[in-house]
Each structure stands twice: as structure tokens, then as C-alpha cells.
Length: 241
Image (tube, rainbow, N blue to C red; front, top):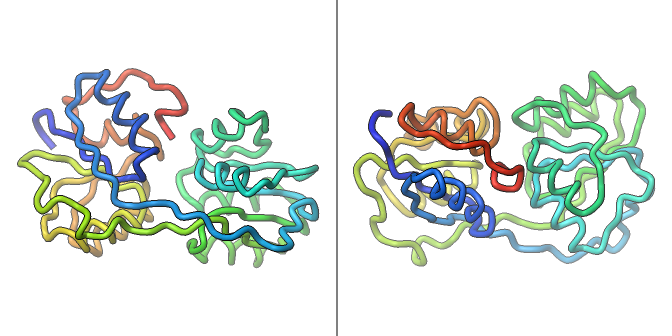
């Protein structure tokens, strides 16, 4: 990826904004193009949060949805996938005890199994639909796992998106399989792109992209993967998440 491309941000609008601000401060041109929305689900009638040994958060949105549902962790120990998720907990006065330096849910489950002895009860707050492999891995290792759906990820309808917003040299940042699906539903173009991790990269390849893959799931790594002419000063944890 040569030259100095424009970066196209495709995450949910509120999550795009810190990244856009950090990129613009570095003099990088940005197009904010949110492709997904988070819709809260009705709160569980009997969440039983206090009955779990561990609560594992896999995204900042999971932390926000957990708190917006009026839930508290009680005496459960907390784990966080990624610096942004750990920072979201810290921002509300909670600390993650388990914060492995891994990139996705499978690696997170693998690290948890290696660090924590089963049996133990594990709560997974987060989206209505999630990858099955991390849950299966935890259960096979002897953990009692309960998923707590708090929100669903909805694509922005193609009719609400611009007809052809891209220009030559754009690099699209794809941060979830959901954004890949929303993109392909709206446009036939397959511009250069960076995937935030291997799970997203797999979805992108299946959709006809040829993605670069960030070494770690944060803005700085995404920028490094986008091209050698892009330089970003170390951003705050909020802007990296």
C-alpha cells in the first residue's frame, strides 16, 4: 500500500470518532462511514451476575452495555480482551484482573484456560450473536459458561449509505465480520483494506477482499498495516479501542 491513503472508518459512529480525531491530528485524511449500529436488548429477567466466579468482557461495547443494563460485577473477578476493553472498565472504577495480550476471542479463551483452573463459572456479557469456538473451548476445559446477550449488532441499511463514497487509494478499516457483511451488501467495490484481526480477515477474504491484518487489535497497529507513509503518535487508550 504505497502513497498516503485516505482511511475509511467503518465501525459504529461513536467508536469511529476517537479514531478519526487521532488520525486527523496526525494529518491523515479520514472518511467516517459507520456501517453498523448497536441495538440494546431487553434486560434479562434473572441475570444471576453474582453467581459467577469470572466475568469476561470482550469489547468496550460489552462493558458499556453491561453497565447500561444496570448490572454490577459483585464479587466476580474480571477479564478483558484488549487494552480498549480494560480501559473501559477502568473508566468506571473497575479493574480487570485478567488482561492477556491477545488479539481475538479464540486466543482469549486459550489464555484463560492456561491461566485459570477449572472448574469455575464464567459469564460472557456481550452481543446476541458471537463466535461459538471460544465458548466451546471454555466448556470443554471444564468451565461452566453462561452467555448474557445485552445488544445486537445491526447493519446500517444500504439505502441509508452513499452510492459510491470511495476514491482511488482509499484504505478501509474493517473491525468485525459484521462490518464486512454490511460493506458487501452496499457496494461491489473491494478497495484495499486492513482487518483488525484474523477473524475479520477471514470474512474479508471470503467476501473478495485482500486484507492486510493488524498485528494487534488497536488503531496504531491498523495504521502500521495501512502503509509505511502513515505515522501516528501514540494515542490514548480510548482512541485505540
